[in-house]
Image 1: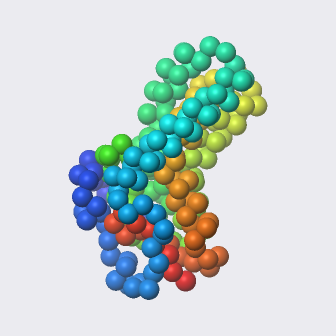
Image 2 (image 1 turned 180 degrees about the horizontal axis):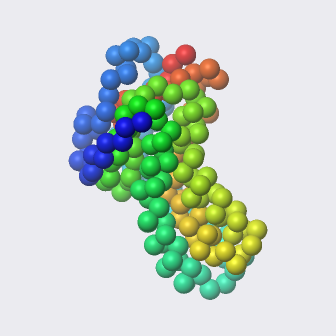
Length: 187
């Protein structure tokens, strides 16, 4: 895998990597948002609702979350780039890291099996989100892990959207690839 840090995303979806569609002209585009700005807005709103729901769940376990949020917020921000690196290591070819429009994201045009695409999408959310949050739910004294999980699970909303699309649209033996700001599948 070769990681290329592209830096700030300029908002031009035509500047995102492309190339596989010409090799797979019969590929089917995921039924997803056409407009990247709409996608970004909707994912940020859904993330906020998820954050509030998980916060309320945490409130059932402990009281006095103010200090937890200070440390948890800082820790989750620090984990944003490692989150994208965990996506990136699931690629075998070139992958690009972008920042902007309220999102951190990686993009690459490599063809992946449906299972690997789902694993790539979920890996950082499992490591930085679900595992720490689960540890907190088991033992509420791990408040920092709870906050890390809370913010990381919420930040992964776009990844869950990709997993949902893969699970509901791609056949069992399908392959997936990204092309600009869309994801495609073929058999």
